[in-house]
Image 1: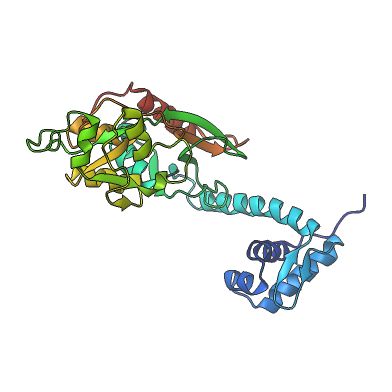
Image 2: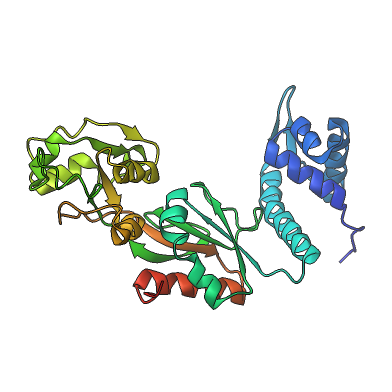
Amino acid sequence: MKPRHPVPLNALRAFEAAARCLSFQAAAEQLFVTPAAVSHQVKRLEAYLGVKLFHRGHRAVELTAEGEALAASLGELFGLLDLALDRATAPTAADLRVSTMESFAAKWLAPRLHRFHRDCPDLKVRIETGNEHADFVRDGIDVAIRYGRGGYTGVSAERLMDAPVFPVCAPALPGDGRWPLAVPDDLRHHTLLHDESAAGRPGVPDWPAWLEAAGATRVDAAHGPVFASIYLAQEAAAAGHGVALGVAPLVEEDLHRGRLVKPFDDALDNAYAFWIVRRHGADNSPAVDAFCRWLRKEASGEAMSP
């Protein structure tokens, strides 16, 4: 086999940026070079490979089939390279980067994290919040905890815990002498707090579903303010502004501390659950394995000490 000349790494980097942005101009801004320099490097790579990587239009570029295949591989390879370089600059650091939704971080993870630090004092955990898919390679995420149906592609996913849904409110509301919460229909006298993140998610209980299941026929399921997240709706309930639908793991701590109460026992199953998500096919470090074991222990209720 005829040996190739050394791989043109600068050309590969320029192509990867241009393929990701579908713009030589945007790629140039990211790489702090001129668009002409990006174009030159892409042409150099095309000559090296002997294939055309872009269809060039007057105002836009489009990947060829060969370009798409190469871009898919390079994105992961450069992500791994960046991650390796980051770790090489701090070889003694034992950090874990954990990505999860804000409500889970605030209401489940944060109140328990001191127990992980007690068990693994040499590991520093960095919590990052967001609902988008975690990019384990490019963003250097070690573990993600997601709320969804599962079936995540291209990753390893493990069901952490179920997420049944039931009403919650401040302790004073059920004992209100004017409008006690004795039966579900009594909710007609109280403000219902809605979470818009449940909208359009089949199988995720909302107020109409819960009221129907509880046999409450006299309550207007549509009235009340709408909040952008579960966290905000549950905080409004704790502040005494109405009754929210609580997701069990996210209200567990507030129920335990008496910030929230369950006025009714009726709970609905949830098609969504909480999942541990990791990069598929990667050898996980002992630190990642230790954190995942700790998550399972906490979710099982074994860790009862403060």
